[in-house]
Amino acid sequence: MRSKHVYWFLALMLLACAIPSVAMASSARIQALGVQGDYMLDYANVPAYPSAIVRYQNLVYGDLGVKDASDGNDDISDFTDNAYNPALVDAGRGMGLLLGNLFGGKIGTFGIYLNENATPLSPALGAEYINRGSNEAWNVVWGYKFSNMALGLQLNQAYSSYEDDEVLVAPYTSGSSLGGVSDLNARQVFNFIASTVGAFGWNTMGAGAGFSFDWDSNGRSSFADLSVAVRQYGFEDTDKLTPETFEDDGGLSFAVNGRGHIETAENFHLVPVVNYYTLDLSTKTTGEPSLTNKMNGLNLGLAGQWKLRESDWLTAGVAFQSVTADFDNPGGGPKAEMSYSTLPNVFAALESNLWSWFTLRLGASKPWYSKLTLKGGLETVVAGVGETEIKDSPFQYSVGAGFHLGRVDLDAVLNQDFAFSGSYMGSGNSEIPFTRLSATYRW
Image (tube, rainbow, N blue to C red):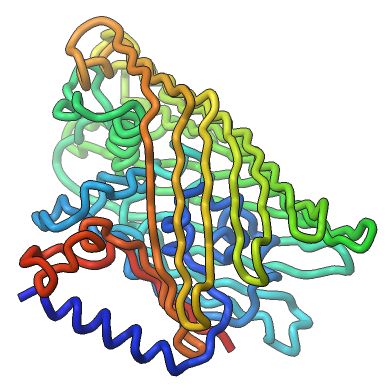
């Protein structure tokens, strides 16, 4: 009986009432706020901005990931956030350690990440879907703080192998149907296609560097983060009998991410964000021409952050996004082309510490205008022939909670159906209370 979820939930709140609070941060917090992580100050952004690791010393986190309905569980809310990879089940689990006190901090801050899914090349829409398979071997980050500058370096690898006596099919075949999504909005269709292409088991070797700059002006503190990441997406599938090999074409992918956090007034910060990436997923087969498969994305955003009270923050902004993808057809048919854009995407998030032991988070976004165009095979997702365009303005909403348990913070994304029904004890319905959970311990 699902009423046990309610008992655990109530017991957790009662326990938290008696324990003082500390600051919180986690991937569950970012998802509950419903915004791209660049706009928030959070240790979850360290893989995107390696130099930012110097701000988050001495912590251990554990992430139980995202509960997904595709494993046969039908208790997930209709409001499930569609910004996360829908092709994965119970995705995003991981554990990490950030250490800044080794040898008195003289050798910098180290981060060690043990992730279920490979680290995204960029937090921008589209890039986070590629190579999200469960095969990341390791991801390490090092950062060092100078006077008003910080340097960060990152290395990561994802590797898996499979041996068989025949060559597997290509990552994408133009004209093949990815059907069943004709009732979804433009962003959901884009997410579905990107995650389907990205579900292919790429092996990667990546490196990245980040730089942070701090400055003071008129008694106000500001900073800027800039990062560059380079990664090779590779695989090799060989039929030893033929012999025939299907493999990557050796191209490099890279991303440039930048953000600022500029204090223009005592209770206001301006946050500009820019992300650009290019993914080279090209392939080649013995005796055949290479297939060019590329995805490019650009995101330009600007947000304002208002300090409403001592610990309450309101974030609001706009972002212009543009993503294009071109995939050759292995059979020589029409090239598959996809483009997605928002002009612009408007978003807002509120984080309020209602009590010393409890934090409420709300987030929403809605493009004034979004457009998805599919050509040359990908149009089978919706119509079946020719060119397909989807123009709409879908609304996305999220809500979350944070519980302060001494040195441990528990962050959760709320299943919004649970909020209405109260689960089995409240209404006889069996919704689970949370769709994502993270825990953070600091010392």
